[in-house]
Length: 280
Image 1 (cartoon, one colour):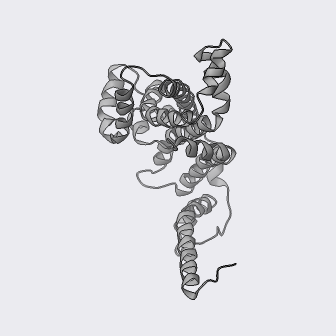
Image 2 (tube, one colour):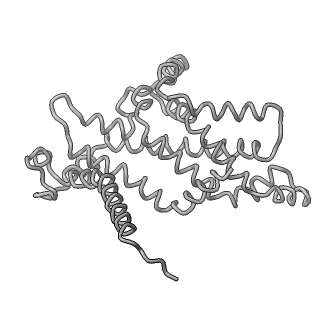
Image 3 (cartoon, rainbow, N blue to C red):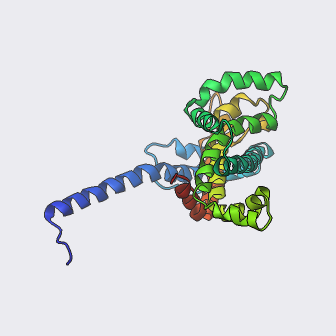
């Protein structure tokens, strides 16, 4: 029998819908305004009252970004660093997670606790120590400095996520490989990795997004314009006497689109991996 909704139930439902609509507007409007401003001239952006739609639709901001080799270098740097960190993080995290999930060894609990405890340290407190290490090793203003630094922050969570996911896979799979004469290495690459695609994709997306959006360490550990990443490139458009707001918005849109496409393509695997990895 269908339940009848009382006026109180309908009022609660309506209030919930209004709250959700308000939340959606609050989250989506800045994105719309970024996209809208990227198609305006810098003069129109400062016009009062502001226009909801561009009065003179223009692509000059995008032309200024895509036609400038210096600005395109920012995108290359972000892709290269984020891609390298993602590959290394997934590879190392997968090996570490397999060890935590399938083997018992001395110090396993302490090591696991140490990995978890690293998540409680605010990254900004490590800025000066990392800067000192990078300078002392002579890798300041290089890709190596950014890649190694980002690995420190991406690996702990990636190991925890992958370990949680591998814990959901039955150990019978490894035992079946052992019965057939295979080694643990064979079980990992021939059996575990193919069926762990959701967990691997979730880890990859998380790592890539974290590296792409990082600002503080990229600003501190690099100096030359040729080594700057997209977040730093956006900040450099804030001049001493003028702000290129339309170019800032255009670069933000161009920087956001690849991330959006990656998430849309990998969404199914990403959600499955995050959910399975959180079970245990």
